[in-house]
Image 1: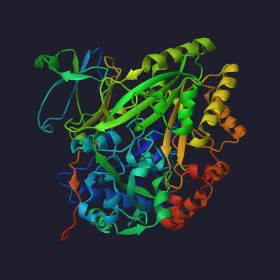
Image 2 (image 1 turned 90 degrees about the horizontal axis):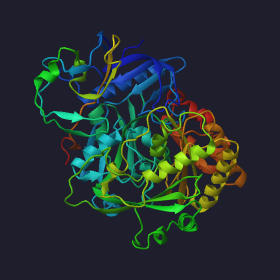
Image 3 (image 1 turned 60 degrees about the vertical axis):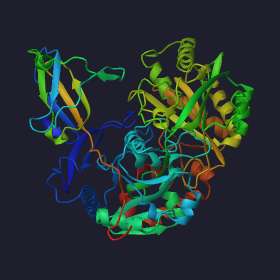
Image 4 (image 1 turned 120 degrees about the horizontal axis):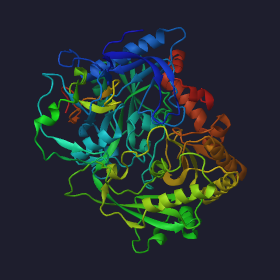
Length: 108
Length: 527
């Protein structure tokens, strides 16, 4: 794997796979709060299926996402899925920040 | 390769901007702030880490012989060469903090005159507009206007004069109240106009947060120069933008023939109400899309009226929302795959006309939208589009539209087409010295097209037609242009020497003038 911050390239080195499972490194994810099914029209709907076997199919390729992203992903590009040259490009997202009110010590 | 704290430096061997109008650049020092930092063990705060990183990069750049130019990258959306990189790029994508200005720091003069419910917000320069809208929406606020879409970062957006068509508001830079610039290692300015909105506590706050000595400076020309800085006035750490309570926009499209007299009259008077006598209210937003090749519906009048959002929870943009486009990205996106190579003129014109008509049916949108939904993510795939945007005095608007239509007709006779449409928008006057909206009311003509080998000739003919008609114009800093010093002098007049003097006053040293220079400055005579 060669990597750059915010943009990671993961070489899969697999052949004839039909699906790719991208997952966070062990111990980095605070847990799952929902599952969605997203289509190319931009619509995501709540997943009506619970079936762990979908993530464990024998013909799928499993990719561990970069820990440097700290589970925050902006975009994932899977190039040449199903080929020997499959590659995943991962963009980490910037951290979310709460909005606060500016203040100075000793001033209102 | 130099090593900077809290920064990951990548040797980018193939850097391209979003629309691939700048391609294949080698940027040996692409410095990403706060990347691959273990923030759980870092001893400095986020703002301190960023400041430490920027200071180190600038120290290195200033110490080179000669000093090394540094460009700060936004979303790299511009079609022009404004973000032409040198050897060093700072990528401040991690600088996305948003903070409310303490209300006790607002001046009486500001609170007496600001829009109802206005809340000045400190927004760091790397903040993406869609994210900003989302965060503001969650606390019941929004921007007053935006570009036609939302992928920009705030510093790049105002540096290029990005605008919408909110006819009584202005461009986005006109809603900026203060600008925090890092102008040299360990040296920052908080710029405001002389009629400042916020007291000196804000400069103290920036200094406390970053550790960089920050001077509070109230100077009209320096602030007005920094509002549209063309990426050359120091590193934009943050801006203070005036947010307002969330509102909704009800959209309506009206189809009219090409050259419709009533539409031209609305352009002349900025009174669109004769076009919609059933709703005789001045709209918040008024724009046109024009199909220059139409013998049927050739003009699409886009109108948005403001209405209360009381009780309506904020919702972000969705690909599924019905839209009234105010730029030409969607029509170009709709042509991708349909126009794939040389086609006979009548076929091209049929495809453009059919697409525009299908995308823009006459009537109201089914539901009102928040501003961030109405001006949502671009549907234009990267690399396929190009555009120029011409800005003229609205008083000459009809003549300018006719000149450009004439130019497109001449190009059509030569077999060259604009593979898109004309977008017409209006923005009132700015104080920003190099904001394109220098007139009492300004008209922007966007000529968006799919990219092909002949589009530059088409744009060239349009620019020439305005010169021939004696209509002074400038072009959007972030789109294709052929601006030079003579064009700038004609259009901006004494604003050019004022901008240059202000840049000198802000940056002071020859080293800073070189570090924060860009190729665009030399091209248009701003050095």
